[in-house]
Image (tube, one colour):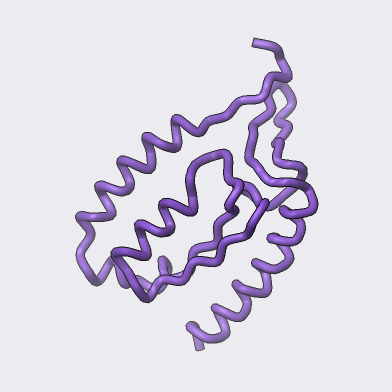
Amino acid sequence: MNSKERINVGKIYDIAREILSDKFKKHEEKDINNPLIRMMIVGEDDLMWDSLAMANEIKEQNPKAKIYSYKGAGHIFAGNGILDLGKIRVATGGTAESNEKAKSESRKTIDDFLKENHK
């Protein structure tokens, strides 16, 4: 492997998603309705894993949950969709413009959610 070759860890996250999905379905209702999982912020161009699909699965179990998704944004809402870790580069998804917009908008979304739900 080239020292700067991009790594897409999507398969690892697909496996994790299956495991988490099975475990999530086994949670008691009080856990599913926990306020900590009532707000999900996801990038629609997430290359790390299908965060929007997982958020939708959680919403099926917890209709009170809210999904805030951002078109063109990746996993971490930063940079140009490639996380450079020196010897490796990880594809996280999104464009620089979309990630910046999602980062800015999601901060306001988080602030508003906390003001409304944690008085």
